[in-house]
Image (cartoon, rainbow over all chains, first blue to last red; front, side):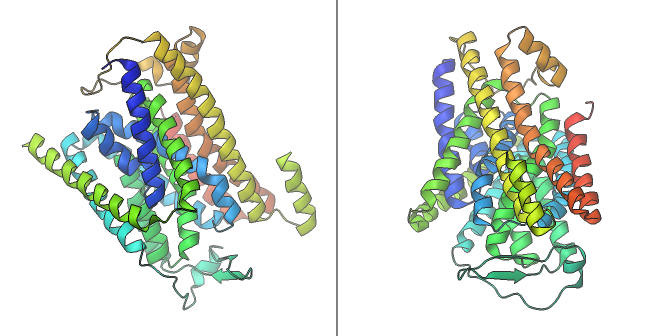
Length: 280
Length: 136
């Protein structure tokens, strides 16, 4: 395969990954790494390096659109980024000691988990905020977002230590596997800290870029970001996610989501099986 | 221009509010990605031209040359017209984009005189700089 064909195929493959990542809300990285390793036979370390770069591009590229909606909370984001960036540094170090086949297996498990979370999100409804958390006000994490009737809906956050710890895990997974781990971040905010769903998802988008930036520098220093891959993959994922975000508003995504969740499941199983067979 | 409208808001509300901060940060991120994309397209096309006819192989892992991993090496590479160095510059711009966002938030919290969040932003910035600048 010559360079131009390889680059062209990579671009369209990455575009698809970005598109599907935006449609399911899982982000580009989760689809990109299996795509690169399973279909393009790229070493998983290269795949992770270039995926981190694409994750930053996607998160930052979508930022303006998210800001316009007025849901994201800069304070919750910044506070939890302490946990995710520290986790990301730990993850990037772990990546040097973990066997590459073990990386593939861990990745497969995260894929399956993400698919399950994506499936459950469809049934999720809004939740009531109850109780009063002293720390929520002390840490200035309480906020409000524009409600349906235009009135601001107030909210508080609960279980801050639990959310903070889970964010550290999300950061570690991001640094180890080159993904945004949006699924874990939303889980930490939405389920554990009881942050309203819309606030969780938009704030998570901002956090993903900052988290990925913490470990991307380390990957770059280690020589894990290949220029020949970075060019088509970053531009492909970015275009795909921007198209996906625009299309998402109008599309009836229920069917697409179901189909895609199955694809993610299959990729997860494939990564685990190939990881196990190559390792032993 | 964006900062000017921020100042207008400032006078209106008596403080630099979070919403204003988020709008500017969103714009900042967009500009960073746009800039990185332009450099990436230029570097990528030159790279394709320089390496046309070669067969890429990423199946076997061999880390990228030392000169393409550090800012000084990348700058030197750009001076000698190495397209790969231009791509790496785009990658560095991209990594710097969220870092710039945190720097901006730190400044905004300083203006708001919010000590707690100045400290929190400074911690995040320190971790980011550690990852970005750390020798080896």
